[in-house]
Image: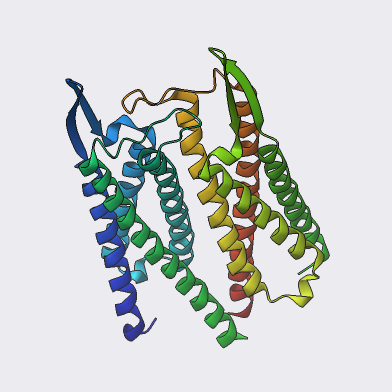
Length: 162
Length: 162
């Protein structure tokens, strides 16, 4: 791969790393307690298995991004990188969608099921979760671009060798 | 592509089509009403935006699978099929995860948020949703296998031409 091409890719991976680290930190620090009718109501990410899953995936994706960034591309087979990028992108999409589904209930509630919205009581908690979701969305977009780039490179190689 | 190789692929696509059609039908027919304290409590998929999204994705994936099945592989560039398979797999993972997140709340509730589980009241509705989720999980696995197969074929082509 030419150096001119690898610098934007390095930047893309660096930005993806930044986004997943940001999502992890913002989710971990999401915590708010408030008083409703003299009862203390506390909201934190660990109350929901979906948000815990979100955190684990972002931590794993951060670790993966860091390892890939600091290993020279010559030490790795790009086939392995392509498949592991595919797995990480799938995990990011999965945890983002699951957290979005639960956040939608937290924001709007579901009156049919009798679930009341909680964001009116704990707005800071909801802002944190929203921030983490946006960060992970950005990371997922970067990873999707990396995947498309890898596929494009493969097709280029095929055309060159045809 | 040899005929011996294309028959298992055709079968895999046929099974994926069956799974998404099944998920669509099972989700559409998920409906139950019950009486709680003399009040009629009704549960249907359209009460939740997440389940509506699930339905749309499965309908789109079914349409896509059907089109791909009946178009001869010679009429399509496999690059286009690879990228559209990637998009459909991402959509399946996304809608499955979102629906799983909301179903987990329906099954177990979330006492911290004051959301009570509803599956005790509407067990048939929950069984339908669970069936739809399993069907889509199977479809997502088939699509993931199709993607890995496409990537593997690409690598084979590269090796042959190297």
